[in-house]
Amino acid sequence: MPVSYLDVPTGADLETKRELVHAMYVALKEAYPFPDDTRIFIREWPPESVSQNGLLGSEPIRPAFVAHVPQGVGRDVKRIMLEKLNAAMDKAYGLPWFITFLHEHSLDVVAVDGVVLADDQQRVEDQHAAYS
Image 1 (cartoon, rainbow, N blue to C red):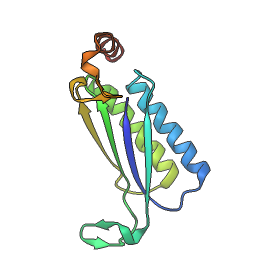
Image 2: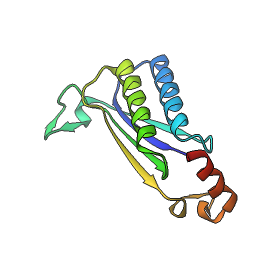
Image 3: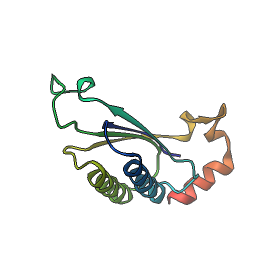
């Protein structure tokens, strides 16, 4: 169920992006195996559209990754996933200061097709079993 946004500089070729999102998907899927609905949105930014520490167009752009994920995954699992995400970013871009934010959500604040996930008892049980 992770839905994520990767903010990176422009310039990577399509094959690099394919390899990157595949490696990121694998890392996320290992940590969050249920359900298989992992989304990664790549947002590319030219240097003149990025400010770092008050300087517009400063280089190199430091990429950021924000992922909305379910609650319940242990710290060690997250640590391994974050190491793999960082390695994938380093391979693709080789940029410094890659930062990741995990926004954890309980099933009572997430809806799919208008249905609150916490209202589906089978979903709750399946997720608990997958993340335990």
